[in-house]
Figure 1 (cartoon, rainbow, N blue to C red):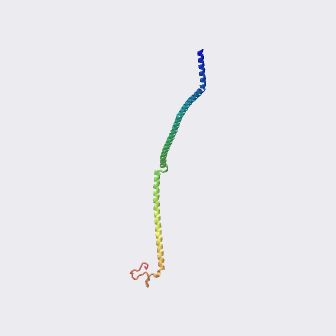
Figure 2 (cartoon, helix red, strand yellow):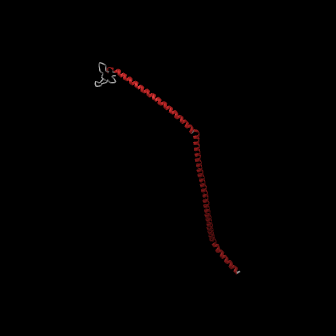
Figure 3 (cartoon, rainbow, N blue to C red):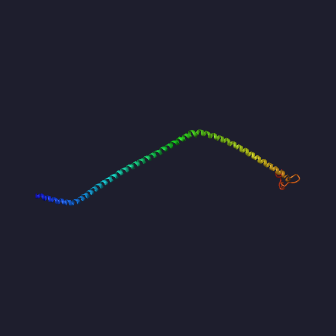
Length: 184
């Protein structure tokens, strides 16, 4: 029994010491647990942050590749449409040229038309030249008749200045051997 009492007293002493330290140990255990949980949660948050960054990186890469792919498709489509438009313009140009030469500006018909036009121009020129010559002759004839009438009028007006058999006129110079045309 002595041993049991001693053990019991030791146990009671230890219990009282444990009871005194229990609050402090409990606070220390809570502090350690909270620190451990904080480290664990911070590590998990860090892990989540890194995985979110990786997911965002892959998502942005996917979006960038899609955007680039769409840009390349659009550029290729525009380039293809420009090429097709250019080829269509070439085809239309050739067709319009052929159609114009064949049906609108027929070379043989135009050549025939121009030959006929040249012949008609020559005939008209000839007629115009004849008409101009006729008009010129008429003009000269009228001018000559007018000049003759003027001379006749002048002669009638100045008949008293002419020489007669008896009286020499003013146009008959004493130094001339032959009378002037006016005198004749």
